Length: 250
Image (tube, rainbow, N blue to C red):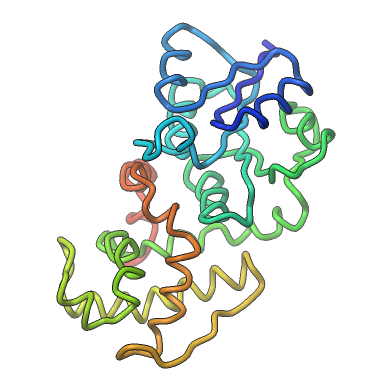
């Protein structure tokens, strides 16, 4: 079984992977992947991007669901999180794929040919860049961004209200109270700071905004990772990963 799978909606990426491997199945969205599985297709390895919005402007599922589907239906397939790390939400995607969905390899789309070839072979050394292998030792920090079940809803609206505790409290999403909003503003800031230090090597700048000095860093982080926090399939993936059972107090 030498066939390679690419889950990606960009034709240029598909052309590049086909030039390297020849025998490649390309699925541009989760529906195509599900049909390929139903047809009995099997793959030695799968390169999976995060954003699959090229086919339909608002996809129902992202690469997270592709990892989950292959994890369940094709556990023998070696899965590679293959994305552009510095684009919106992609670092969180790579960490989530590794931490929650048992992804073997994490590669940037700028990776060279030798890394791509090594990624498909379980006998080769893991080509995940050494700097990223070191970062992934702190992958557990992504759990703390969702330490409470209600936090996902707050991440999704935090940017909309510029991190104002008062404004968010006036538009409470289900499962939240004014007190939980204030708790989020404090505890999520600590979780976000730890994640940024581990994966970006920097601490956020804190300054007064609205009615909380904690607001600005969370707004910036929510904005920089908007596509991840608003991924339509993220709630299902979080439930699948049993995330809140991992975090004390979740």
